[in-house]
Amino acid sequence: MTSLHPSQPDEMQILTSYLLHPSPLSTILPYARFQSLIPKSSLSHSTELKRLYRDLQFQRDITIDDVRRRIETECRRSVALQAKLTRNIRRETGSKRKRDDDDEGDHLPQDVDSDSDPDRSIKLDSALHGPLGSTLQTQTKQHNHSSTSLLSSLAAATADLTSEITSLEAELSGLRQVCEERVGGLSDLRYGRFSNSAATGESIEKEVTDGLEALKRELNKAAGD
Image (cartoon, rainbow, N blue to C red; front, side, top):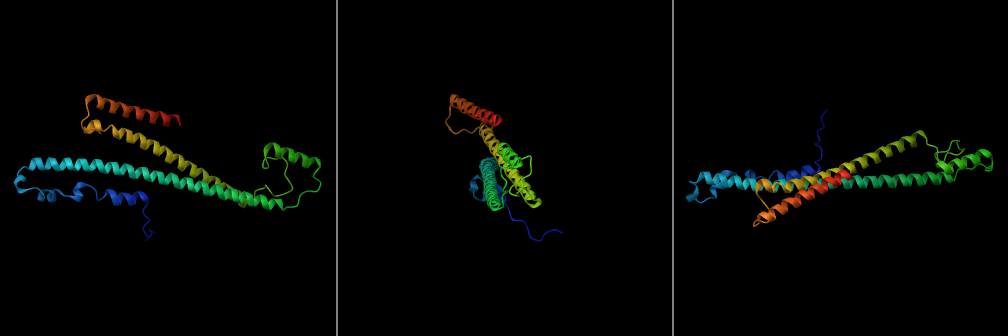
């Protein structure tokens, strides 16, 4: 049965609806409205007017693409931050649970004959392999899992791994975004736009070379990680 309550929009949907959907020039200023703003003496130049309107649309689309990239970057940062906070909370919860288990185990009765051979073997094995690595079963329940605690530990471990994977995916997405931004910066070659409108041939060549070198560094960094 389909739920009657719509799901809550996420950050990406909110920013996209608020910033991108109403932003195209055709939405803000339709061509008919654009014509009404032109002096009547110039309306006869319909070809030039259409060309001007398309150029304005093109410039507007470039701005919208930049805003879209910024939205994607911020949303990826939010995912990484949420994963980090979740991981820290689970780690603190696990540490508190372990401290509570240790405190509970400290109040359990200990074997009086602590100098017997089995106990010495248990202590030696625990010193070598840790309290959970003993080959002989202890007489206390301090470090023994029950079925409930085992399932809880497995669930916590699964959640931690999921958080780690989410964090790594966010980092990879960030690196990919950096590379895409470098590639997008090189699109000036196609659009004929440069940061310095009065750029000479040598300065344009240097700008393109610097952009390619920056992209190469980011790709090498991603490959090294």
